Amino acid sequence: MFIIAAIAYAFSIFIDVSVYHFKYYIQDNKNTRHLLSLINIFQYCSRGFILIFAPIMAFVTESVKDKEEVWFITILAHFLVILFLLPLYSYRFTSSFSIVVIEVLNRFFGKSKPVQLEKIRKHSREVNLFSKNWVLFASNYIAGFLFSISITFLYYVSFSFPQKALILSSMTQLINMFGSIILILFIDPRIMGAIDDGAGYKEIKILTTSRILVHITLVLILIFIR
Image 1 (cartoon, rainbow, N blue to C red):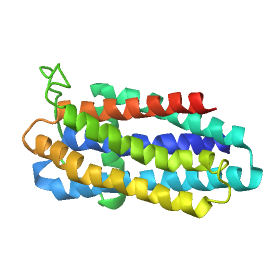
Image 2 (cartoon, one colour; image 1 turned 180 degrees about the horizontal axis):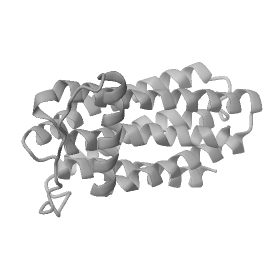
Image 3 (cartoon, rainbow, N blue to C red; image 1 turned 120 degrees about the horizontal axis):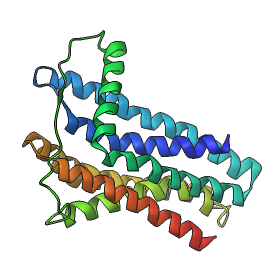
């Protein structure tokens, strides 16, 4: 059950990041809104995996009261995120996976509406990913860090402050809110605008790289504080 919690969290982050790849690799000018609605359905699944992760972590924290177990689940979750995000660097995996997911969702929720998917090739010329994109990288990194540390570290920190559960929970929501603001104001408009202009490959790779570095950072922090 505890390993399921770590896998569920990793899947939630994988879904959140992969939807940007979906929006880049799959396009259909005649069914743009329908396609985006299917992608949104897939993105909402990430919330479902968090609903698996959170109760298990709460149970281990409040009922089992095993600090080592909480530490193990947390570090395993972040390590699995790194492994799950690495395949997103592969065009073959990302484009194929995107098409399969969209076709399955269209069959169930679109009543098999005819969709002509246009596979977009990656821009091989965009070699230097971080040239003039440090602001995008930094905002991605900060947003991802705030999201991840607020959700996962809450349970481990609560052992040090057992009487401050409500305050820690409120602080978690506040930190999460700042991550959402950064995402809405600085990340989504930049990436979606680039895709609309026929680009976006470089921006999506930056997002993927920054998220991986976030979880590497969190793994190192967990090793240090143990």
